[in-house]
Length: 437
Image 1 (cartoon, rainbow, N blue to C red):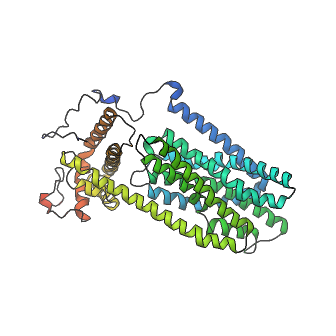
Image 2 (image 1 turned 180 degrees about the horizontal axis):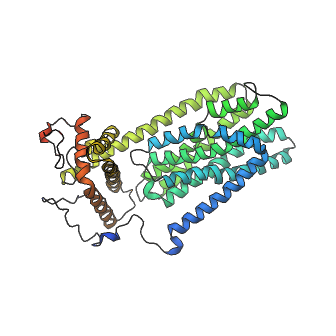
Image 3 (image 1 turned 90 degrees about the horizontal axis):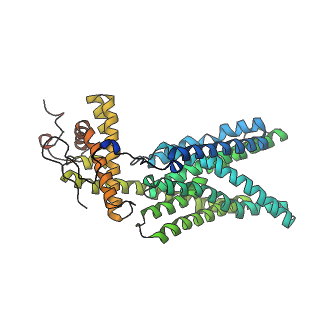
């Protein structure tokens, strides 16, 4: 895959005819027919989620009472920042737009939760009527019905992002992050319901403190297993992430992998709910022998995938350095999160705060360029050769616009973090050498 070479002078070279001569035509969001407009779709999605939010929150408040709802809300929000920060940390290499993450969270908290509460309630009532055994109906509904309904409802968000935000859904990390945000939103709403109901029981019984139902529910859902729903849905996210990595012609693989991930999520969810419903030693056996190891394994996989993304940057960007677009040290700095942060700090100290923002944008464009080239080589970019060329050169243009500040900052960071060993006088600082007196 050839890389356009930079000219020997200090002016940006003219691009090939594949790119629009008028750079105002370069856009990340190509023009579409009105009925396919992103604005129209955004308004429709926001309206749908807002209606779902009004309905589900009203239903939860009706079940828990106003006081129980407020107590449940206050307790349920506690693990949310921790989980959101953890999944956002995984996404730092190529951070996706916040609007995608907010959509995933809102879908889980409102749309998926609404579908789950309606379907689960209907199913339990039907089972209770059919079997004339309400107690068994609750356990059976939690073990068999709830995992299928809830994981399917959460997976719908991943499917929509996979189909409509394909550019931002490029691999395992994206699948894990989107799944994590969706499940965190779902668990948030579900925890309001459970904690609010527990508080209502304590109010009726006149109990409080450590021995209360609220305290036991808080310990079980917030302290012991805040990662339960994210853990289940991450399996579906991994399925979609692997499907995103599949070559363009492997359509069957793109269909079967998400289904396999969804089935695994349902199975793990059913095992967890079953152990909680039937109690006894089964709960601790599933928790210690299954949930904790699975959580550790998936955490390792997520971190490994993030490191793999950094290795992709280190492997793809040297081609652009050889062509003259980047300095030799830049691919090394861009493949290290510590060096990236140091480069932004250096730019802020040397050139001012706006320069730090420019370096951050440069890092983002360079990362996108590396992943674009990698996906095109593997046949997973979903672009024609002309589209790839246009997108590649558009990204190179954005890099060029910021190179005067970004190149010396990244070169400095590469040396300061030990990524390069050459003496300072042999490093290209883009016209500025911090070691020159």
